Length: 442
Ligand SMILES: [Zn+2]
Image 1: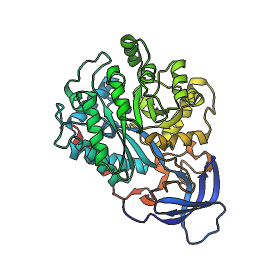
Image 2 (image 1 turned 45 degrees about the vertical axis):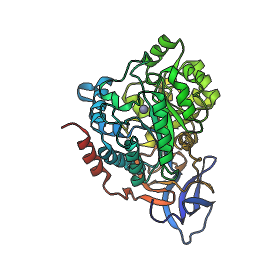
Image 3 (image 1 turned 30 degrees about the horizontal axis):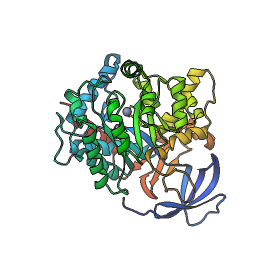
Image 4 (image 1 turned 180 degrees about the vertical axis):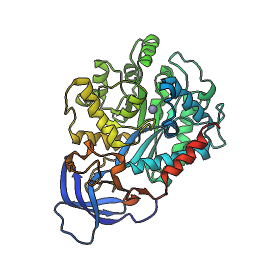
């Protein structure tokens, strides 16, 4: 990143640790890190931040190329299969250049929406047909460059994807490029990616695509390779996955992962939708992160997961925009609460501070906790309080009122990446339109 990373700011309102929203908060930043936060600051030589300043949001689950599907899978109503056909059509056409342009625009859209870190669940590794590129991590390299140019912190979750079903059916057709043939070859490619990536450029983590795509016998290899890394896994997104797992192994996907040692505080269970009470207890006791993706789960008719029960059981909640039908962290955070209201018939299932905690779960991405306090990265999101949507709202409840369009300025590591709603790389709508047109078959 380039540009100034030091300065002093006066926030009209700011969310302080403990969930308190205070007025006139001075935030001092040096070399990209917050060095001081003071309440009731007097005006002086400071840059004013008008609105409510929040810590940067963490998007714990992304497949960047799915952004090309937004608004294109609903013809005739659209089924899950309409969506999946489209997803494979786009996946087949990706190459490192095309993926770079699509991911750069998608990540820029995320920063406009207040996300300052993203976890990319990356599985399009090889050329169509499954042949490795000359650099076997060329696609990961494209994503790393895209994130750097868009000004977002990237945790690249290199995904192991070996089979088409719990029965071990081989990958075919468009899925061939997702696979490394066996877990040892995947682990070898992961080690090469870690060796080639300086930590300041991107964090590298690992992922088990799902219990469908990684057979039980391969799980220990993945768990060993992911020692000390963030480890993400799609878990029980659809009931069909649970049924297939029970039929093949006589246990739920959560039990299978627990048995393989895959559930630790470094683990993020993505979706965690269709769980038994025992699964909830197991995930909570292991202290995993639950990466809930409310706008995707409703778009794909997945269902509503037990987010409140997971939090109560000891899990940490995070939020992801996953397939990017929507890129709006406020909408994801509200989704947690609104879905619970519909399921339980009760309001106030989460406090606004709990929703913001879920929206800023940087630990799921192997990063230090966000917050407006000394020592934290200077990732600041300024939410305007004077728009038609936010006017009149209590700043302490802004998460229940604001949308991504209400974000004015975003600093990442003390550097202004978005100023007054404009990203430093220019017209993100135009960049998205061009990249998406190029991503679809003509
Ligand atoms: Zn996903």
